Image (cartoon, rainbow, N blue to C red):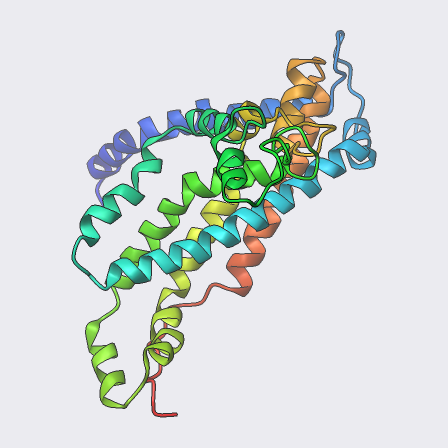
Length: 297
């Protein structure tokens, strides 16, 4: 590469480098710096005090536990529903294109609007869900389940909204992966006498492993940082029953002006997410291998 080519390459790289420095490196530097400073002026250096307070905080640990429940529950159901819908749509039945378009409609709605929709639907006074369950005879009164104000159901209610909003994403990714599997593999399996179940377990699922891993990791990160839906529906209540790390950090910095403390919690949370994602990529990622032919029996 000549010096002229290097200069041209540098000019092409420069805008991306400036963007990364301004919107990633510099904010990350401020976050790390603030985590070692006092919350109020004169912002003196206090070492690992904020980290110690965060680790020993019962509320922060509860928020971590709630976040883990939210991520595992929502992503697992989204993966299951997304796989079922993707398999159905991949058959190409009549009207599948229209149904696919309708199923993708939640992706056009922002999380804030989705949270408001489900907040009204789950309202214990005039919500349509309780009214429907009451008319079906499953509830004694329309106010039997306090979806948003009962600590037993608050987190589940937020999970329902998130599942409705992001299952189409999982379905779309898996459908693209299924459509990329060579049809010759299924033809060979049918010739060998394999059933549809055997074809799924020995061809479809192994071929989709990289796609599933990427989709799950992306959704885990996205679900872990969920804020809009939680804040609109419950604001982390009642009694922190639906408080995630994102809402707890927001309260710490916006309500109590604990900038250093919130920065320390954010770094701890980032390290946890980085460790989980690294674990998934190390122990579950492998180069795609040609699936074994599904034989008889």
